[in-house]
Image (cartoon, rainbow, N blue to C red; front, top):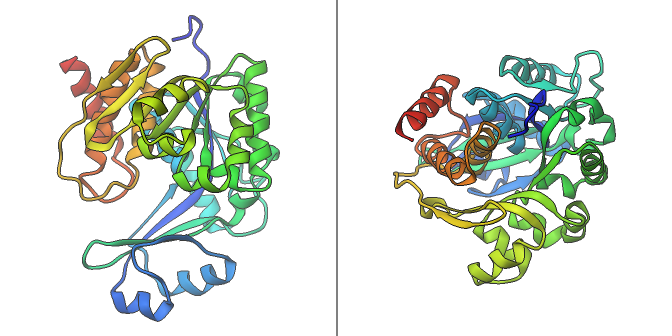
Length: 335
């Protein structure tokens, strides 16, 4: 932890998406020509054809880093989230939710632009299978205009979503954020987000990593893909060349965490998982809370494993503030 505490523990940046969770049957998917169980990107026309035919069970502001930042805030951390939504009902909803969740943001109702806010349409069939159609909408043009240099300079960490490297204006914005962070002594953290990002946007990812990052959060499939090694030990050694510290999540097998000196295997928690969506996001939020509030890397990984194990026992990427506060209290009392 810094000797002089900064205003924000983490400055996050990522895609802002409104999650619409809807119950459908197999016939609906067939009629719409949607392949069951897949996660795909859709365009405006497909979005406009799909959304009016659905009645959402739940709606929430989301996105990978957004989920992590909200968890950080619920645990009691201070976060700033840079993102882009449109001046529509969903965009105003997204902004209002961020404020209610205790996050500062670049967004204001006065600066929202015309367009359509991005959505992740989650269609759940009676067998609990989840099918995702994601429309990036306004967040597809995330750019340097969404960066807040003052807030970034007042943060201990910058945390970037790897998904941004796939977008024409977002990738250079992420590179610029890293440059600004290094000038202001802000530590840089990155998540690969998905193996797909490594396979198809390697050049943009390498440019973002540059001469290295302070922290990498990833899973074992991603680290193997990035380093080109199927051997986890060799992949871990290779990761040390680009990341001063890292945490490699391994599902129920726990986490490999490197604090810059020691590599430690932190056990996971055995639970009956029913939905792994959001587990990585929750891990990141809990891990950042830990390392910005006096936890060692090992203890932060243990806490993050616990939080992630709770999220996979329910549908959806969130736990309530009361649930997370209770989890933190229990963890501290047991430590």
